[in-house]
Length: 204
Image (cartoon, rainbow, N blue to C red):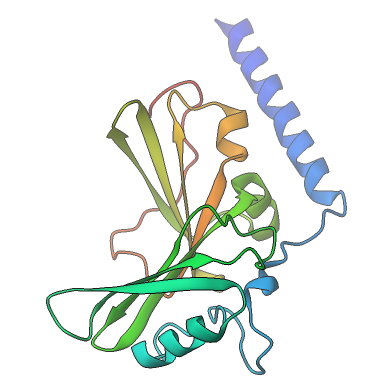
């Protein structure tokens, strides 16, 4: 039993050294700025010129209608007239880090954009190396055709939610290489917990 504990500790130490080495290896920073428009004074969480908490529904529609990365969009209204989802498809002119197969979306509440989400091709391992440990996060499980673990992490300094899902039991390769969805403009729930990575080889 003691030998097994020593082996586990040794494997963990080697893993930490490898990850630290990768982190120190002049890896390029994520080109998240490609999500920004050419307009001046537009820093994250501004995306495509749309600023959660500031941009109106009419302004968002105009921006998407004129943006070369967007082929079309549609509004799905909720019970109230000035609330609902605005969903758009990519034209093919968008940067390679954006997954054009997945529609992007934003949520409008009382005529104002509350949050905006884009599906990317960025692996979660890259996000971890670039931004470090998330401020808080959740893990939850859904049984569909196969059991999946859904990950949601919040980076307070970047006002950004990072989401992705993987099959479980969870393994290192699938976890760190899963592409992420980036959501801007959403605050975490009050009961958000400090993020912990899953237990490898399990559904926990």
